[in-house]
Image (cartoon, rainbow, N blue to C red; front, side):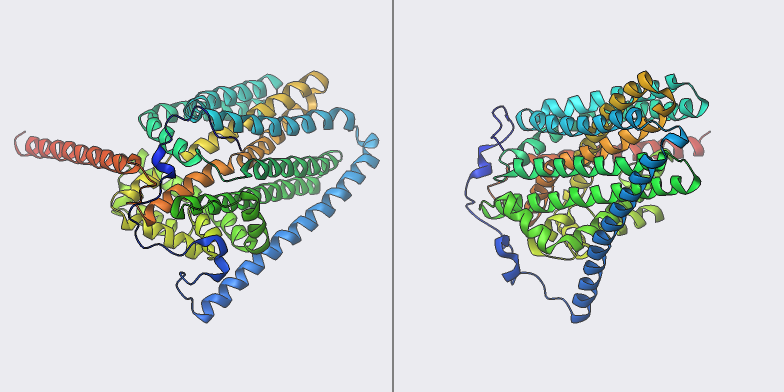
Length: 479
């Protein structure tokens, strides 16, 4: 991966040797020989291995089953296409072309984020609502009531993105800095790992498209079930692919941040695929569920008028649940999964305890915008893919436009997430390494300044709420 030429935020202290260092676990280059990991009980070890092997077996069994299902559906669809008025030559090209476009768009995003992260951040928060709204308008133009209803949902989603972009504007400067620092010097051969991941995601998506087309050709109730199963398999497999990339690159990046040593990303990927797939599959299942629950709780708190600080105070039963869940599964745990060969739940718990042990760091980490940035970037890729397939289908066969547009959006979104996994991996490694040695000279004052800023804002907000409460009390006493 080339070194970014215009990465102005990257500080030179990033590559300096530390003058003083807090005690750290041993270098994780050969994690199998580490002695720094706390010993587990025999029962915990057996249970952990059982679940890892179970989920690893589940991954390969579902890949085999889905592959057989897709092959059968494809052959059946081609045989029965003429008798059910299905036109493969009109249905397949737009959707397969959109899959290729999603891969090209994901590769293009890499260049933007490498050479100018601040501009990429702002472009994402501007383009994602516009592209999403365009998909909504396209669906409305298709004509039917169902299409218009789904199109309205896309337009509402675009408006929500715009409002969110306005709300987080004050946090963009910090996001620029942390993104530039963490991705300034990616591990050697990161480009090859990312390109391979995108290629696999595109090929696998194209393969599943053939099965979806085969099921669409007959359109029975059972075929709808088959399509749903294929899409669920796509979502989980893409999550595993993305997180495998994250574990490998965050492992290599962590070695550099924590110990000043370089690790080849390709070697890290080899170890990840060979030894860590079970933990990655567990994390790929837990993290989306926990993120959805915590996001719902946060939205509920905001709509009910509670400050975002409730998420950290634990004053509310929902917030207590959210704070408990985050220790059971979070994306930062993937760093310790790759670095120390821990089980995913243990890794998540250990990393979050480290964040909490550093005053103010938990709030900084929990409010980080990297995940939102990757999500909206993937939405943009999905929208571009959807517009490609939808417009093409409108011109050649309008009856297929709605379903093909939605399939293209879903596939493009997941391909986009895979393509941006390395960026999130670098940021995760930066935070975890900082939490273990915040006084290292490899880190500049970006995070301490952010902690100080958030503490000042919190104090100001608390003082204002106290004054408002006192004024209400006085008005009640003296009406």
